[in-house]
Image (cartoon, rainbow, N blue to C red; front, side, top):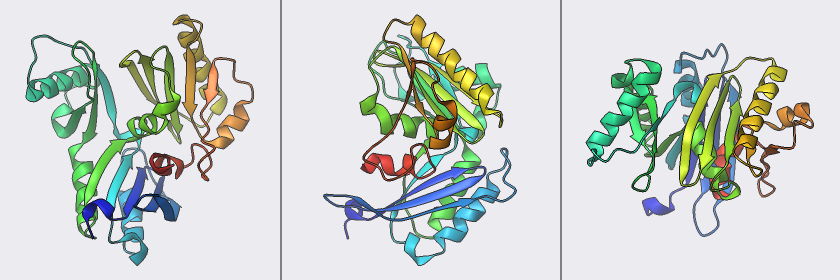
Length: 271
């Protein structure tokens, strides 16, 4: 079978849960299997318990013989905006510039992280994303042990943004994705992002809803059309009720997953 027509397994790796979907490729891709599991005793700073849960699932025959696409929780990702510079011309220089921007925010840890940059037109800022090299290496080792080629590895904010891109404006607004224990947000401007924000969050969801309203006020300052587009679990949307006129909860009527659940971010690229 051509590698282009192999089934694809989507994997979401997070501190306290692991989710998988298997999609049959072809003219009309369709989900043929899915699974979601809690990670017992999962902690935010250690991905080994989540990888152990992933190992146990991949050992089952139904998850083998496919390509793999991995979405990594924002707990284990770092972001920075990289301004345009006329003095930088090579990819190596751009990555080095991205490392400097990340180090200015997170300290001198970038050498242990894999840094990648978004595409951008000349004159526009790029987004730098960093993921620990050790985590990526252990993911690849896990997949190699089951002969699953890794075709993509993205942090959740990037994966969620790409999944909703056709619903988002070219400018003026915020895109926010919320997961258990984490929130990440990007300020949308014409041609890309000009600000990115991420935080670990607690279990007091009323505090987080107030945080969303703060984003709403920031978006409103950008103009009358500024809005906050939120990718979040259905239960949080129900808890929020009327969170303000500037908040738009993203719902995909084409998907059979609950909006914002652990499987939706994996299924949305095929919807």
